[in-house]
Image (cartoon, rainbow, N blue to C red; front, side, top):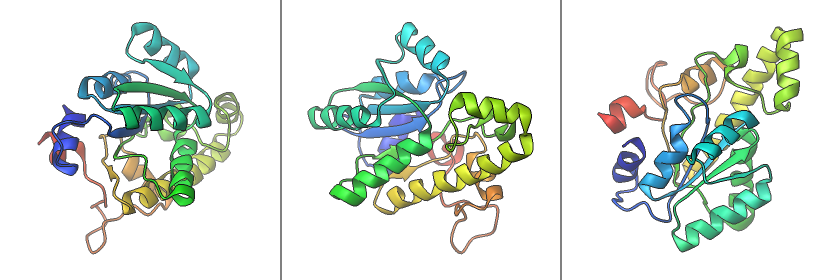
Length: 216
């Protein structure tokens, strides 16, 4: 319902065939995102750092494909988008790398390859394993979290700034991003990322919340 209503509200589209939804998280609540993309008929690319979560969703049949190669992900995205095929593709890697690759495609080809975007990392608990920084692999991140939580926190905040910077570039070209109620925008703001709504008070963000703006 969230994806369908986002399409209706922001793309003025009842039919999401050929539209691309990019997000992250295939864990507990976030695992439904892959299934939602296919039900809605769009192309869903979902990043997840934990291979166990990817394999679980794939085994369940909720996730159609898995890849750890961004070149392959972009090729599949283009193919499914062109042919209007419903697809859920799990990218085994950090969502920041995925967002930055989409910015690179925009910069080099002029193509905006994503229509809708969100995030379901566990940003309500970003410094204790809910969000893994792009600078490290998943295993390296777990080790650093255990050995030096202060350094881990710093890297998470740097990663959040990169995360938002990439989203902002794509949103400026017409992608519609929303907050999925996971404290992503709040923690990004605390990290110093550019998520404030221009001309508004500090508690307002430039991107909408799915509760008020989509489901409401």
